[in-house]
Length: 387
View 1 (cartoon, rainbow, N blue to C red):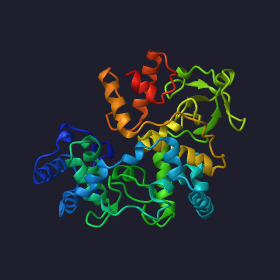
View 2 (cartoon, rainbow, N blue to C red; view 1 turned 135 degrees about the vertical axis):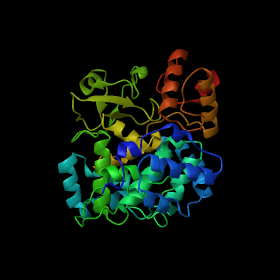
View 3 (cartoon, helix red, strand yellow; view 1 turned 30 degrees about the horizontal axis):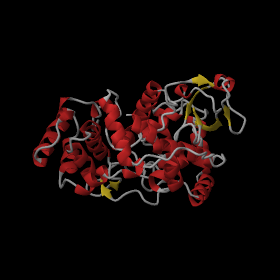
View 4 (cartoon, helix red, strand yellow; view 1 turned 180 degrees about the vertical axis):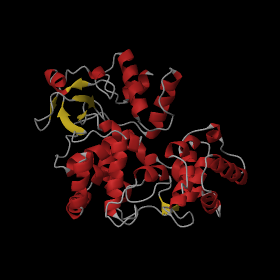
């Protein structure tokens, strides 16, 4: 018997997706009605909504993300330690069989998944203790991002119908992710895989299940098999900085002709790459290959993405990046001021939040070009004063 309709329908957005706020009881009634319209199992819906409550601690966590205001050097040094590297390499050996399977099936190096595993749950040691059902409902009721979380509520009901979630007991991260690599219910339904062969997908207790499922997610997001993702480079002082950034691709051979070279002296000449300067022209520099874009489908924070991708290269044997001598970073408050000024000039900065994300960086580079400043997308006090 089919317990639910297709995943595409479960996760589809409808006019009801915009329903948020107001009485929580009325909100739950709306969820129940829409679950029926979507063809979800009535018994699973009852179990999912029985005892549901708002969780203020979830909202507090959602609003408290100041860690992403750190610059790349500060963030990466905070997250990457020798202990994490040593543990990652030990796990690479311990889970060798499943990593070999992942490499064979998806062409995804073990270091990529190890980095996510490390950052999401410290290799499974802390997976979060928020009630998943309550987290999803709380964030769907909140009007900040209902278009993201309301569909995941229905995926949670479908997962309950499958037996993959106990609404009263399943716990995870504050944003509703479950397991060692932190997957939302919709991802679990679509990409949950049995990696240890016991016939059960257990993302909380089985590392092989979690890693194989995570690899399936990355593949579904467009990971290109057996291709690189990030590589440290050296850049000449006279480079046209306006050609850097994620929207200015060239082949590696073309970059080489401009004096840009990989630090280790080897790079695939015919592959497309972008030059990214997370802290401007005087800081670390990297080639971002097409697989780098997949990281943004996992997490939209530029700093997190840069650090996770870089950590994977470290686990693969790359040296510590050359930090250079970048201009001092602006504070979170100063970034907010800059975002306000850029937004007033018509730029889409992705929100005035004090976080230097990809949209803010792109706006900075365009404004630097207009003002005749080095267009390296790094916000400086000089730029802020110029505006």
